[in-house]
Image (cartoon, rainbow, N blue to C red; front, top):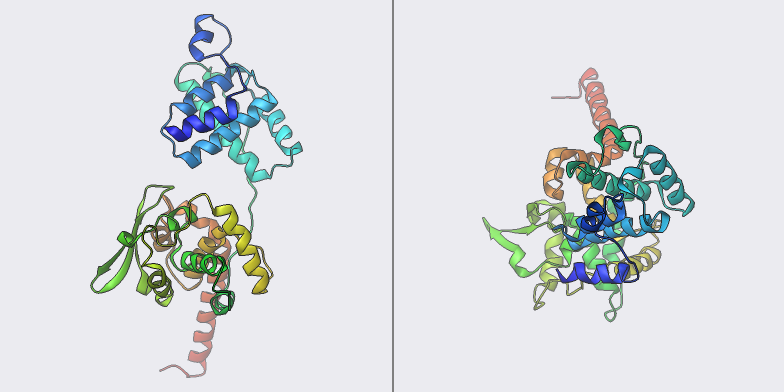
Length: 323
């Protein structure tokens, strides 16, 4: 894969490494970073996942470039975590890197390079921190919709892409790949059918039934484009997020938003309006319902709302106001 070769040369062109074969042949301790590097480059991971794993390898190389497989102990993991913390990495970013290390320790065990009785993750627990996932309210979405933006420039397209994602739940990586082929008529209704780039899960969305079909006018506005629907490159995410900050300021939303805020908005509004969590799971293309349950904070709001409905209904019954 060309992308793998490019990233490999970019990150490791200055690094000299031993291969696993040379190390085992000489009966020297097996380098964990060399093993990890080889497994990454021989994997069939998507480019985005590949970059994440190479990032972990790069940071591990900065900390202990020649650490041996058997040196990945409980103490090593604690020290590595402390190193990452001193580099001002967020708790959840540290957790991501630790998950990657755990993956390759498990692979080393499977290949008889690591003594399973010394498995460090039996004692070391990866720490996560619950974070508040920003989402927009219906009123804030309306503000964005009603904004008067210049006809020239890219702010208007950025706003439209973001709103389209709010009304469909698509990730940025999927929005930028959409073409007219992803839209089809079923029973005279427009459906969006696509395969998630991140999960390879096929998703079918009845656009007319989602948020009163608000994604449909946006689709119709851009469907004459020759190649992709919005004509935005897949590597433009950072630039789009900068423009979203401008839009947030102009609309006086008083919150920081990124493109992924749109997906959180989809899930939050669907759950709050009574959609079943398994339905939301299917609409978002989550592999498991546990992923969807990260929106448990809004589920609490939904419980309160439902209990309020019961209380009001009971009061009406007591006063003979129900039929």
